[in-house]
Image (cartoon, rainbow, N blue to C red; front, side):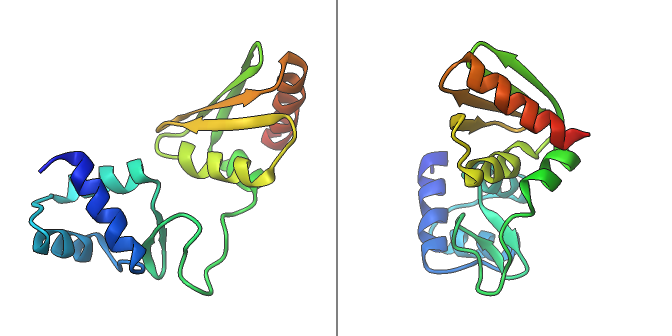
Length: 147
């Protein structure tokens, strides 16, 4: 079965509630006719932006009750961002490998007026700003968190 149909099945399973581990997710998918190994599931959880907490894997914004939100944006930036470069109205933000998605989610939660939106890969975040001036202000703000 295709990657798209596997992703759809994972999302359907998580709509029902958190899944405690990748092993449980693997069993649940197997019952639905999907044969996915641990490496595939790790990639799927990363690509889908799933949240891992003590309650298990869940959809973003639907963490198990009692779980805290993401760490503060300043902490995530300080720990994972390695550089920020402006390119006209865009910011190219490099992170350590595998950290772009949670950092981008934290940046999005800030609802900064300079940021129109973010696109996160594995180790790079593209932040789209309204104009060059806004990009400069936001780059300065993020650089300040790195210090």
